[in-house]
Image 1 (cartoon, rainbow, N blue to C red):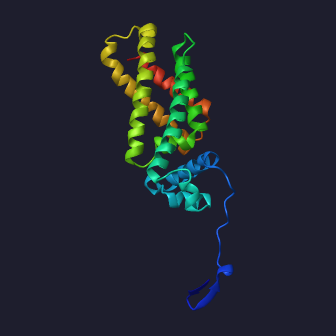
Image 2 (tube, rainbow, N blue to C red):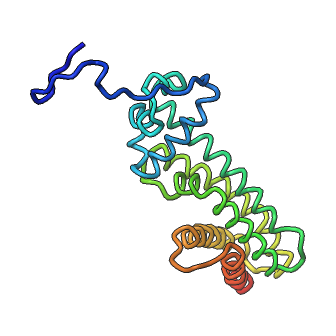
Length: 219
């Protein structure tokens, strides 16, 4: 076959051809496709995740991506489910690491250090779910995850404050304190990932943990 391009004739053998992707079954290829979808989402926004953009990111043809996902919505849903679920499970596990001590200040420090360690280890999922553009799919997932974490935080902070400080009017104060706690978590994660100040996970976890402990102690 012959093409004309700006007056220059080329043959099929001279046309640039995309390298054939290594043959992998859909199950083995799917994680690679989702990783590429995440890269596109972080760089250009979730709205930019399409079959074509992910194929370009991977350096494969569209049929390769279609063999894994029938359309972009299915692919985006799978990405958010995978990354969101793994991140949520890790964050809940980190929250429970604040227990096991009778020292309230140490409990807050341990909790924030564990939380920030998860953020550092799963920085890309965190940016996708928490720091992404306001795509409706991301917003809804973030709300659901935040509601689950809020319930977990409330379930251990309430009894701990009663045990440690016999806080007066705890029922009235607790919702506000939980909001402040979660805002502190998100702010600490933002500080760690953006690197505005050079912190290690342990240093930042101790600093924020001590500050939040004082706020709860004095409530």
